[in-house]
Length: 509
Image (cartoon, rainbow, N blue to C red):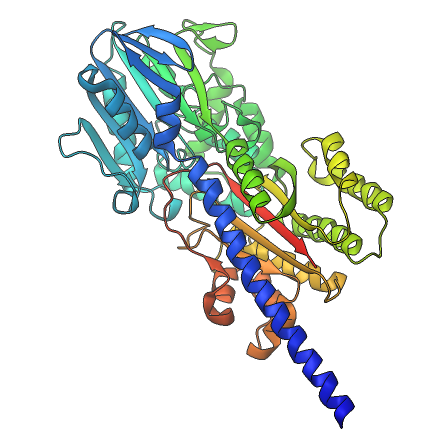
């Protein structure tokens, strides 16, 4: 009896230790995510990038003599704080501004817009979906910019979520027709580049449309990037950047996903008219608008660098694997689980350092490491009782097959947990992942994302929850809301910023 009592006691102690470690990892992940979001707060980014002195506006070292009046337009999840900061800098030089911002962000913004502000804030795109309110804001922005003259300067503020907040379709297409097509395309598994290509070809302001409307006024665009590799033609679908895509390419994408044949006639006509019409090159020089200067003032590299620094305080050996994550969540979760398993095996002394490096290089072909050489160097420094932090960022996609409630980050966290369970990581090593959107909103939910971990599937048994059922129905929000009182959902509300998604994996003995 003593023997079994001892075994039972050891099991209870082991379970308690595991639970404590899980709780600690949960808190560390939330703190690391908070630090990443704080690093890309838009007010600070504007103050750091823009100066006004003796009638000259300086943007990242470039001087612009200002002639009154100056106007502001903006659209995106971060532009409220950007606009407040810019109004503080411009003072009396600012005549007026119009910004299109997400529904509810005025209440959650950390900085209040002054009562005497010259900037009109128009909320819309509830749950990150274009609507009549964001359409009205687009029309107001169009009305302002198309009446500017060459003596005027307009500062355009752009951040993630700009597409939903600037949904004005080309003439002849209704908003509902446009939204239905984009929804079908997204649900078919189209990536962000394909989605933006089609958006631009059926939109009036995207794809350089805003820059054309602003001509001949001087346009200065300040951008908080939410796309892979900071491509100007992709951020908010490139309203102040020349359009490198074509209607022919958009048609090919729609055919690829079997959507072209049943397309609304109004959209078909616009795409066909675009193909046959010639581009007006009056204000384009060397492939760029001659009256526009675009500046990236913030991106996800700033956010992940903050995680790198903070993780050291918690005693982790950290690896920045990639800032360009794309692809389908179902496949990505397998890659993340595989990478994690390799590090876990090393910590368990079942894999040599050389084998770890060899296996990691295999995964490099799937997720494209930021700097293969530096990752190898960091692995060389590892020792077997080290705590490991893997950092990745980007914007993967989900193929929607169910009718549930969730978002790509919640889907990734739960799918990762299931894949880890399949790989049977030993109980001596814990693996925990946080997957969250830096805007604080994951899909049409009130969560930024969720946390997954190596024993989650085992822990579901007590509540009779089947993770695979929820994954198949794309219902991960309801899974996490039910699982252990929702403590693995990450809820922080609108953050006022957006530099795509952050994925952090902690691996420790």
